[in-house]
Image 1 (tube, rainbow over the protein chains, first blue to last red):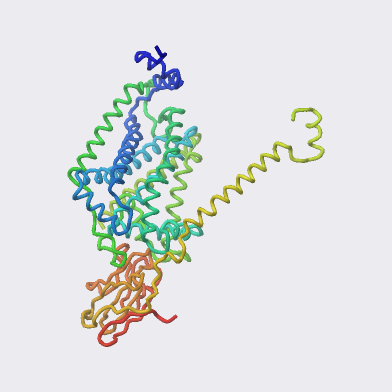
Image 2: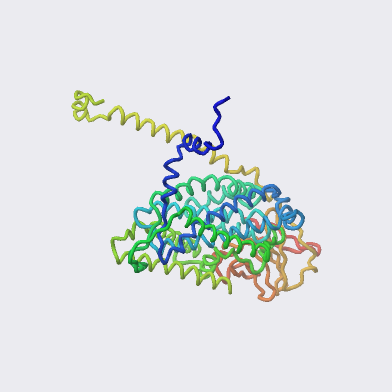
Length: 361
Length: 160
């Protein structure tokens, strides 16, 4: 008889070989705080499950999608109308992406107002900002791939805005576009970035983000305006209590996704024609709408600078303040805490007001 | 390294330690290596000019003049550039590069406004001169030359 591991002992055998003891110990003892804002702890997990959905549906789309200028649009049409469940997989991907952006915003602002970015969680915050940037990168590059008239002009505008960034903008836009005009080169590049470069960048940053969250445990809102009356600290086990609540949140979100996909399958516009005028009523996706509406209001020239450039610099400044907030509001000063909350309200209100304005104008 | 003679020697000579020197050397070579790797990648991603669809056309016959009534316009392709032709109220034909000077969308003629208009951000241009008259565009549209030859509208580059 060979000395093979017995099925009964296989688990122990693996445990020993893989040195899983400390990880199991950690998992068994992991706890999540319970309080009136615990609801917001589900946002990250929801984003994670949507991300897994994006990877799976994206992989399925790659089976039929053709990143070639004369075939791209036709391959999407085939997905939508000929391939069994093609419309379903594509709608899952498009709607899933939109839901993910929505929950990214919810995650961003909930952690912001609970002041979860404070020391020692500065790197959790910064890696989260980086993940948000990668998310927008996925959105922007994926949007061009169906090669319809809206996606063509959205990309044109996005790259022209990139080109306005001082010094590096022009060469960056040229490299991304693969030339002076949007062409086959642009499709090839965006496809490569969307399915290869960004996923490769996402993995380590996401790994880091999740690792530091495990290392520090969940942040609890205790100070400043978000304080809550808590007679005693309450905690619940992550396994199995919290993870089952997580599952329930996922079921709800995936259910909502299924409803959207079934009732509003994602369409495709007419094929992009680089020589046709921009379609009347063209608007960006809702998550870019607030910026679009704001830029529309700017005059052509502000002082010696182009209005557009001023707008881009302004958005850049807001993003920078948001990213660096952990180093400003460390929890040591009440006035700084209030200033940070004020900035968050200003940002969120601006986002909501300009988005609604953009929707109705 | 930890021998007393060496530590007492160092402050006198004010020299870099062996360890520091090697660490610096590794960092320097690491930097040079990464430059060596990045430069070809950067050049590789910069597509050659020869690959670009160059518009070598000098003139394009767009349509019969009678097919474009006064007060209308038409988008057309001028080599690799989107362009626009207008038949304005003064009876003249005008042509421009149709790329909006704001963020590069392709403009169109709006008969209801009698203006060249961009659907993306609402920029407006005068159809006779191409001058930016409303909205965000910072500059006028680049002009092309439009003339009627044997009843056909021929658009050509402006001699510059």
